Length: 81
Image 1: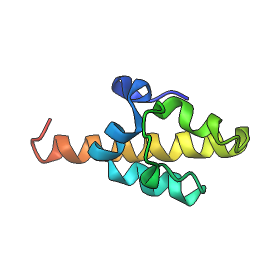
Image 2: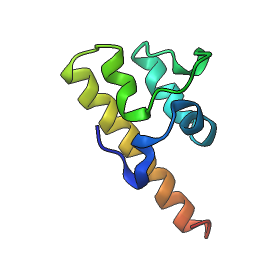
Image 3: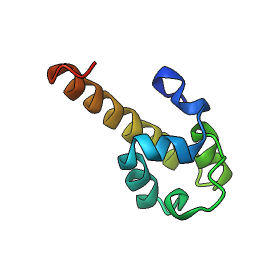
C-alpha cells in the first residue's frame, strides 16, 4: 500500500489520532484499529494483517488516498498548508 508523506510508515494509533476518518474507512471493512489496544501496526501493514484480499486492499488504499487528497485540498483552500 502506498500513502503520501510517509503516512504508511506511521503507527496506526498515530494515524488515527491525526486522521480519525481513516478509522471510519477501516471500520467499513471490519478492520477494528480504532478499538485495538496495541495500535503499533503500521498503516501500510494493517490491511494485509487482516487478510482481506487484494480487491479489498485496493479499495481501502483508494478510499484512504481519496480522503487524504480531499483533506489536503481543503487545508490548502483554507490556508492551513
